Each structure stands twice: as structure tokens, then as C-alpha cells.
Length: 122
Picture 1 (cartoon, rainbow, N blue to C red):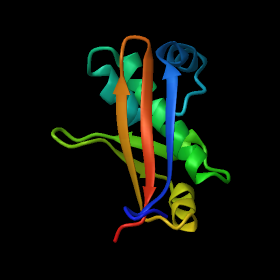
Picture 2 (cartoon, rainbow, N blue to C red):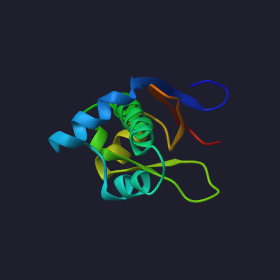
Picture 3 (cartoon, rainbow, N blue to C red):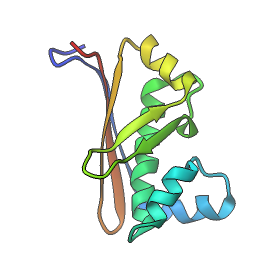
């Protein structure tokens, strides 16, 4: 752990074009709320790609049997995005020695990215 309480971090970058085949195949990790949020705005595939990047980064950091479906990206108007974890993912967060998970999302025309931090609050 570093002096800011960061236990681990990950950055995930992916092509936005990865989202359409996931949605078409039905085997995607998105919650109904994530889909509704994205489809209520312009460029839903970009928004979903950024969320997919966050889910993958968080699952990689948490490890074990945590999958991207165990992570949900939530967004409230006027607030930064946050991650909601399944009970299994929450348990892995504690096992990793962290009590907080932070996320930052971004996207451009062809790529989306997310940075995820596992942090121990002071």
C-alpha cells in the first residue's frame, strides 16, 4: 500500500466496437440499469464500452472468481461514477486489504478506458 492508501490499480483500454457483438450475442455483463443509462444518452456504445472497461479492470484487480458481471457502474446526476459490487466482489475487496474502490471513465471516437483503484481509507 502506498502513502495515499492505494492497494492496487488497473487501467483497461478497449475498442468501442467490442460492445456491439456482446449486446447482439446476449452474453454481456451489463445490468439493466447500465443499459438504461447508456440508451438514454447519445452514443450508448461508447458509454457501455467505458463501463465494460471499468468492469474488466475491477474484476482483474479483485481476482478470484469475480467476473465483470459482479461489478456495476452507477452514475447519479452531478456525481462521479462509482462501482457497486456483488457480495462476492465486496468480499474480495476486503480480502485484498481495501475498503474502497474508485473509478474514472473516459471515451473517444474509437476507444474507451477506465482506471480503477482499490484503496484503504484512512
